Length: 102
Picture (cartoon, rainbow, N blue to C red):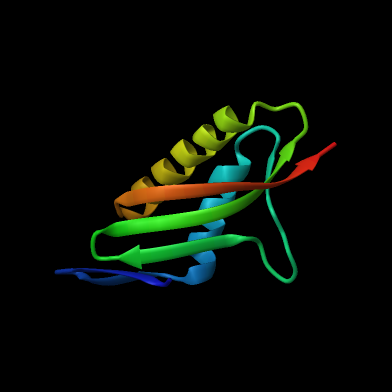
């Protein structure tokens, strides 16, 4: 999952943990959303390929929220954050609502 971008000036490597942190921060910026935390880590899976990135995120969402709206907001924020901060095309952000929180 480590991402490397090469240019004339050298290479830039974004580690797995940094990329995961970007995704988690963007997802949790949506009100009522927490990235699910099965032990020992958060549930985030990121695949980087030549044609772009695909992410899969498991969420806990506050009870009473409209789930499709929350999921679309998370998708948009994660795609924008990864696209802007890492200069990578995001092909998909797959969301699984795994739990509702009181």
